[in-house]
Length: 504
Image (cartoon, rainbow, N blue to C red; front, top):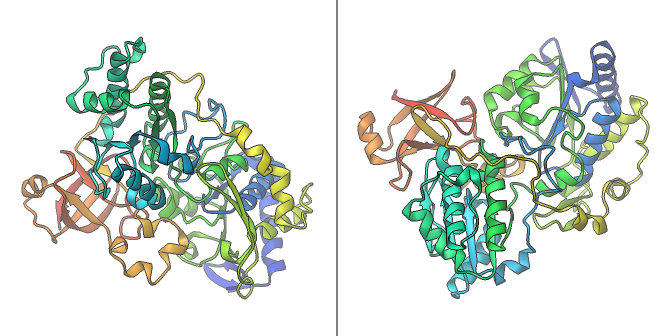
């Protein structure tokens, strides 16, 4: 793979110097003709700590704070109200000592198989009671003490019920925002289980982080943890979800978050290992933003569909071919070296970003190693002092969301989640890589007059996808489960929201 420029709608291979000078020149023109704020940067959370750190520095030195790695997130109301960097809230090894667990919005077995295995082992030994609050009743391969399966619009309300029930069990004051909430049977059962424990953890999964009320779910988990004396935290969506915050790859000074950058299109985008059609909360809006931009620069290890919307392709090495650092969900920095040399004309992304900074005459881009970038941004010794899940100054308001029609439940299957697994031939032959189906209850299929295996057209806004029907009786009423991050569903809108279904 070589650097490529698109001229008159056609791709041309060029030398690295030509490609980088073109990018530097065009970014500078946009920066000075309009404003640096017309430039946005989106990074995959699977990028290395050093890559994200240097991308953020490049943007801020240019004068733009529009940088973000939280591509599948939809609610950013917690920004500016965090006490620190969100993390698991507990050492992974300490999960064995927990006797009560509440999993909120987590496809645990597929999203976090190693943590699932650890919890499964403890549960089988009778050390733990697992409680589940989610929108699907997936098989965990372990017994759960209680399960509350609700529609996405009611997830925050359900957690509020559990919180109110725990307050009653502990004879503690009920937060005013929860005073009028009626507590259902399942919420009482979960509360009773939690209240009977001595060492507790409340863990928020990927679905909870991506939810339109993500901040409310976090705040409710915080209130619940205070009532119980429990720990709470995030399981983490990607290899560097914690590292993304530590690297500063989020808007810090009033910049635009990932969703805002796409809903209010910028004139130029830098994409770091990100594929907007698969990695964003609303792929349809993301592609529209790419199509409207004057310049889209894709730093990617694969040509992929970026050829349709990018103007420049810069081939960068995957993590296996470069040095860098990942910060796991528990905040542990883990640095590594490449196991093989970069393929062909491929270059480490941190070196590409460093050269761009130099070509644009920006100060502070003279790094000789990835370790120098890491140590300037955040040393391993400094990580612990920055980890803190608390929110300050955010009002508790867990009202149920309004929903018209069927609600979409969107998971990201294990082998759709990042560019490498999406292209692994062996993984793409597994059951988890089968094309997405529109999963629904048999009652809903009967209402539609459709049968399993038949193809239906799912509409969301002005987008649509044609997929086969699958039957899942464990789904909540009024819901349709349809995976994201796949070419068959990239024409749809947000991962949450109303959809309609019709027979083809």
